[in-house]
Length: 207
Image (cartoon, rainbow, N blue to C red; front, side, top):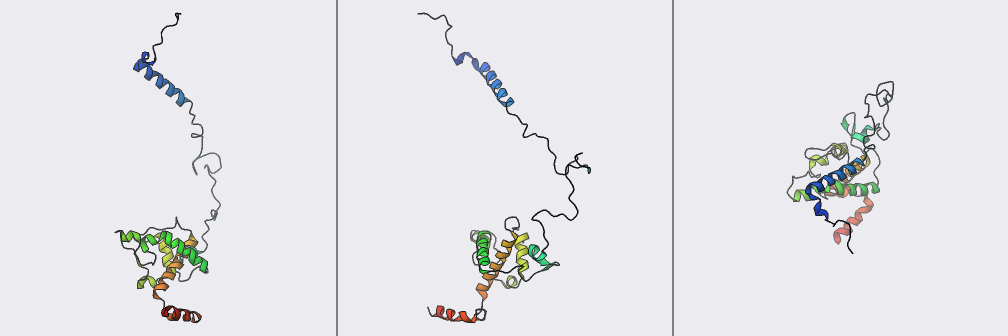
């Protein structure tokens, strides 16, 4: 039985020009369906000129003396390691055994790559050929105040970057406390050991 329909010629009958035109038309229709209303929503930048408030700004001016939540820095020793510009020699809060354990953990994360686990400046990056880090066991640093170490951890020193963005204030002090522990471990005398613990030292030497 013969069909009255014209024979099918397939996609090749379109030709390159017609195919390209059709593709461009479909692409245009697809892009037209992508609305940018959410991306282009009207908004003001902070303190941009605006008639929203009497001061002519899009933002209200904070009352005098206002401090953002979490940004009160009324304890100078705690937040800077200094009092009246002078480095402090005492920790701004008591240090317990659990605090030293956390200080050790933070030290191992942030400090050992350069300073090494013993604080001798022989971290892995130094062993791989990078610049020698300072040893905490040199006389100059053993005699430094704790506020000095806190300031260096916070603001950096020489080739060392500051860690204020990575390490919270309290944890910076705990790192300093652990540095003091490392220094004592390498320079302690028998007189520094409590009398009731000295017998344990004698027993350890015999073994």
